Amino acid sequence: MADTEKIIEIQVLRYRPEQDKEPVLQSYKVPFTDDMSVLQGLQYIKDFLDGTVSFRWSCRMAICGSCGMMIDGKPKLSCKTFLREYYPQGLQVEALAHLPIERDLMVSVEDFVTKLESIKPYIIPKEERTLEQGEYLQTPQQRDMYEQFSSCINCMLCYAACPQYGLNPKFTGPGILALLHRYNADSRDGGQAERNELGYADEGFWGCTAVGYCSEVCPKGVDPANAINQNKMNSAINYFTRFVTPGGAGK
Amino acid sequence: MSNRRPYVRSMDGWWRRDAYFVRYMAREVTAVFVAAYAVVLLFGLVRLGQGKEAYEAWLQYLKTPWMLVFHLIVLAVFCYHTWSWFNIMPKTMPIIFVGGKRLQPGTITGTGLAASVVACLAVLFIVRGMS
Image (cartoon, rainbow over all chains, first blue to last red; front, side, top):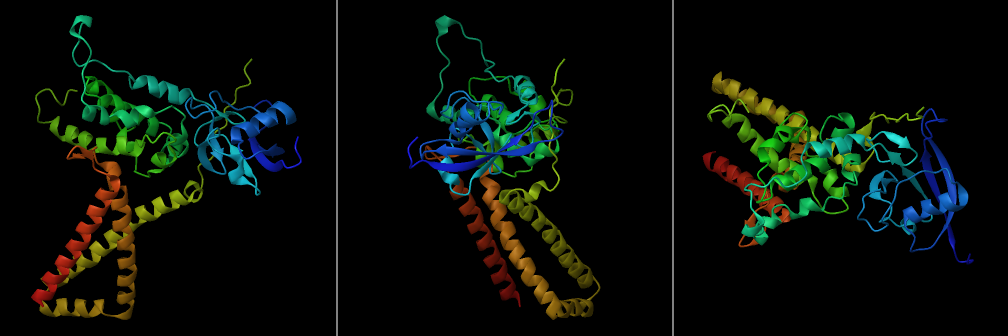
């Protein structure tokens, strides 16, 4: 190793269910270069200092959504955050807030995945078309209505940024409600009524109090707060009109 | 046998954890001041119903030093209230296209703030005109 290499202190919140009653901080001194991400720092720890440290990662380029964690208290992708930003004071990494810690920096994703499946995150065609009829056409403006919401990589940073989810895990949460809106807002989709049973429920859009931090931390510019809050008006209209439209109240 | 024992962290003091949450709580708390000032105005309406003398006494009470201080605090809080709510307003609106271009969040916030300034000035001029 070159003499010019700097050393940074990384504090990792450890939790080993078989031996720790509660999470404890453990400190590591990591040599680093300016081009190293926090994820690479953790990989150095695992390879050279302590093989028992557990964390998830895959692509290393902010597209797989696996390596989200709290870095100095902020939800971030560790592959997209650089160690140099925390030099010389050092940094603390912790599993994503508001989610149960499975082990060290890994959280339980069960709740997220179950909710993701429940909102039918796929296009339910408005009209069935045969192959001969060709593709489902869409104007650029129709595409703009959902495109940003389709950039979600399921990294769950927005869940770690959402105090309402932390206080009440029954709340469907920012990322999944944004995906619900992504499909509802697609001109080719006809599944709005099915999805809105979840969206208009107490655990749906109304669980959001417009804190807005989810949109701030999203590494993909999805803006979940916008996806959720623009639906509150639709939900309110639906709530009142169902009493006056034939068969509406039964839905 | 599974060693799984997922650990759930406490939410105690959550809003002090991040400056963003503190600003959010500050925004929410401004609503209490709005409600308090609505009570002040409602009280004035009651006094007005009791006759000219009662109403004049209420107006005099508003001019006492403590009420002036209260008004200054409320004014500052209302300014933050206006700014913070128009700041979050773009999040509550559907995607809008004007002339084929997407309406930017800054434009929505700016329009809201401008509308509130115009409304305040209009009320001020109307009241001046009447007195």
